[in-house]
Amino acid sequence: MPVSLQQKVGTSSSSEFPPDWEDDERMAFLFSAFKENREVDPTDWDGKMNFWSPLIVESCRRQGSVCVSLQELNESFRRKGAIPLGLGTVVQSMIRSGKVQKESDFAANVDSGWLSWGVGLLLVRPLKWTLSALLGSGRVPLEETFVVIELVKEKAAALLAAYRSSPLAGQSLLSFQELRSLSSHICPDETTLCLALLQLQRGKHVTVSLHEGEKLVKFSQAGHGRVSPVSEVDLGIYQLHRSEKLLEERVEALGQEAEKCKEQAKALLKEGKKSQALRCLKGRKRVERKADRLYTQLETVKGILDRIASSQTDRLVMQAYQAGVAALRISLKGVTVERAENLVDQIQELCDTQDEVNQTLAGGALDSNEADSEELEEELKSLLEENAPDTSLTLPEIPSHPIATKETAVLDDAFFHSLPSVPDTSITDEELERELGRIRLNAT
Image (tube, rainbow, N blue to C red; front, side, top):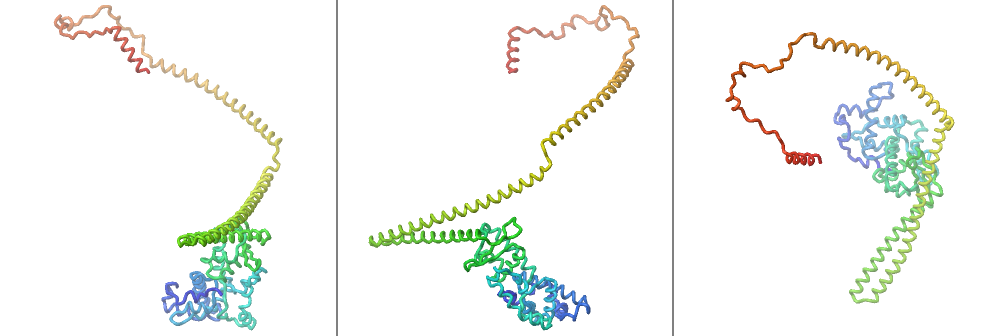
């Protein structure tokens, strides 16, 4: 049985409910029974339905449950000693809309693998519901268990994601116990896990089988739309993984046993019991030889698994190559060397034609530019002539002798003697050689 909502919730806290929960007048209306049918008062009917339907789903989600019964709902939503009178009508409406489903209907189309697991026993539970339906009663049995479809889909998606992100994703088959450990944080009980697996089976993501009394689960691999049936190859690989695990555990146990023999030998030597210490050492040697043999077998199993993994990778690569060749063949359909050469010739011919057209157009432009240049030269020449100075004006001749002014005439020798002496600008050959040397140094 799944963990019930009542067992998880106990006494509900008001913080888990909408703000209307504290309004006595509002809750008195919501706790009252529904009208005979919706046509009598659609507003009354829809108001209650829109309050209770999402609250039931959210309450189950908060508690991690995917199943609920009317009896559990009555206890979970008990308020001030009163229980809602219309929850049976709400459940019936959710059944009609597909939001919840009877556990028996949900597990109706199980395959032989599920039946071998005993999941078919779920079909026996709803006998009271079936009889009441045949007798014409519209009441929902208090103990009838319903699956909340939205929540079981969420659990199924989380379970698939947990498997694909775990180290076990490389194994095609998992034991049910391995899956229980992997999904303990998602599915709190075995029935919840089975319901999540049933949902995954509906989406073709899971198949189950029973091998030598052991429940096995096979998931679809990432990138594959659906899971393939359990094959002999899958079972063989599963047996190898199981043997690997058992050998690892056995080798570890033998290693601990050998270490224990060594410690016993040390203790006996301290006590002076040399013969007993030797027997312990002999026992340790036997254990180590056995551990070595098992370790060799373990390495052989690991080597086989590595080869299988490599072959699977090679198969995927070959499939990718085949798909690539097929795509390339389709892409190159109708493409030949002759057609390519013909297209190149046509392109070259068009390019030559374009070059000829460009040259023709460029020649016309040059002639036009040449004519324009000649006109511009003539206009520039006329402008220069306009701006040229008038050379027809007569100027006096330049005198051949210096003209004496009044100021220079009165200058005497004392003035000339008062002027500074003219510096000596002569440079010797040595100074020129030194200057030339500096120029060469600066040049380097």
